[in-house]
Length: 88
Image (tube, rainbow, N blue to C red):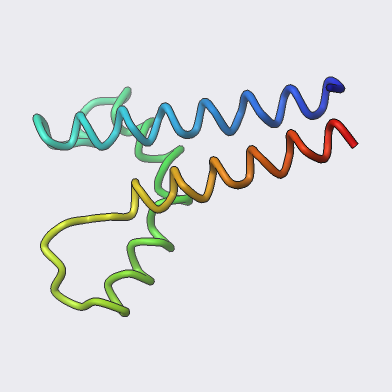
């Protein structure tokens, strides 16, 4: 594996971790009130917002936000592509 592949893979893993942290924190507190959670929102919103908008158009009025799960699955798929490309 080359350096670029390693860096991309680690960035994807970090994004997955941040999305999981955001989802868990959202169960216990309102995010964005302090600088640390604002930073978390700033990093994860560009990934989650388009997915959330798409799912709300497909299934309007859904009470559960599945965007973190969909984003994690997409990022894991992307990580697999990156790792395969790094081997080839």
